Amino acid sequence: MSERLIVRRQGRIAHITLNRPEARNALDSALCADLLQAIGEADADTSAGAILLDAAGSAFCAGMDLKEPAVFDSVSLAPLHVDLFSFGRNLTKPMVAAVHGAALGGGTGLALNAHIVVASTSARFGLTETRIGLWPYAIFPVVAAAVGRRKATELATTGRIVEAAEAAALGLADEVVPDEGLAARAMAVTSELALGSAEAVASGFGFLRDIEGAPLEEIHRLAAERRLKLQRSADFREGVAAFREKRRAVWPSHGGTG
Image (cartoon, rainbow, N blue to C red):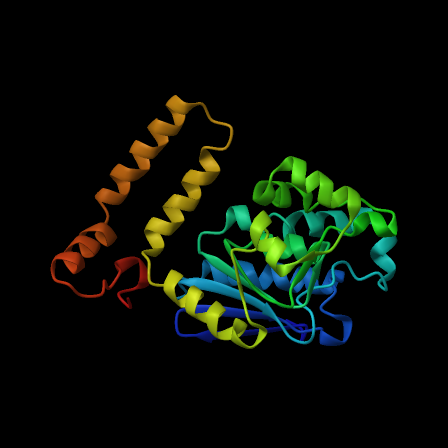
């Protein structure tokens, strides 16, 4: 993997940092491919409990790299973008995005693939593709899921920049913290997520995928099926025992590491 990413482990956290500060972490094809690989490896790592995505430099991600020759070739870029801006629905581990500075176009889409977005007061979001003669096709579904189709359409049509406070009000960010507190807060949130049962979280995420568009009766059936499977799991037995004994659970699905 190239130096476009910094990947490291901090306890049970898989920490991935975009590292093209000279380009404001713009998404060229190489960074897209590297990022997908890093996220996939982190999600498959049974010793990791959660994923933290942040960025080096002055911006989280300025969107597509308009200096890359492939920018005019949708045949080569489209598959990468489809995968990059939909990876969130296939994750089995919780993911936090720590956003500072510009998160524009694909930067907004990238952040919203995380389950929780912690933004700093300097964060700015926007679907700016119409300003360069495009439409945010690949990122529109995840934005619409966060803010609703009507508001997503307004953002995509106007291409306007959304400051941090409004982003939180709309649902583009879950919380806003001072710039100097972003790293610590994002790490704290990710650490908290890593404490949960990996088996329970993966089952819950699978349930959310399964019920998309399903009728109510099918949702109830799937819920009962998954609940019963978890109730018969070693993690559930450990969770109940830990609760009764007033101690921290040591989850079997974490390899017995807590």
